[in-house]
Amino acid sequence: MVHILEEIEKYAQEENIPIMQKEGIDFLVDYIKKNNIETVLEIGAAIGYSAIKMALCKENIHIVTLERDEKRYKEALDNIKKLQVEEKIEIYLCDAFNFETKQKFDLLFIDAAKAQYIPFFEKFKNNVKEKGTILSDNLAFHGLVGTDTSSYSKNVKGIVRKLEKFIVFLKENKEYQTTFLEIGDGISITKKIENIYK
Image (tube, rainbow, N blue to C red; front, side, top):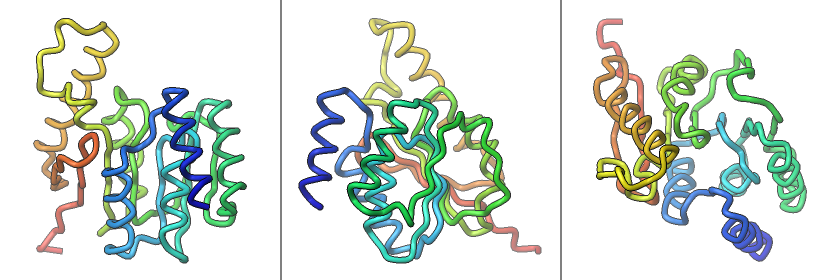
């Protein structure tokens, strides 16, 4: 099992497929165990790496994950089968904005198109349980967020600008409280502020 995961990591590196950094995935797995997370909605499956790591970390967990790229979706399916976690992972080939569900999850994990983090958050926040968590990855974007990106491509500048907007959006959000962690490529943990007057 370990060698299959190592193969996936190696393949992702060789093919330049964005998967979570080791420090980030270790934190995610640990968070799931410590907070008794049983249901996860993941935006951005890529080749299934993080969904598989989540599925392997505990017995009673169910992950719904979305991937819009057909090649990556098929690779994710293969990887899920190789590691025999098909019963724990439901993967859909679709654009996240076309996905509808009434299910409520313990954890919403955002790890897809960086420029779309605010729309992803707004679309799926109501699919998170009252005391659930929204976890977002890549907020540092290789250390570029919060730095001078004038020498980078228009695409990179655009992504960094959108991520900076997302960070401000989280900081200024009156409904939610966010903790920012310098782990992996930058992680945020967002929870709904409990209404004490309810």
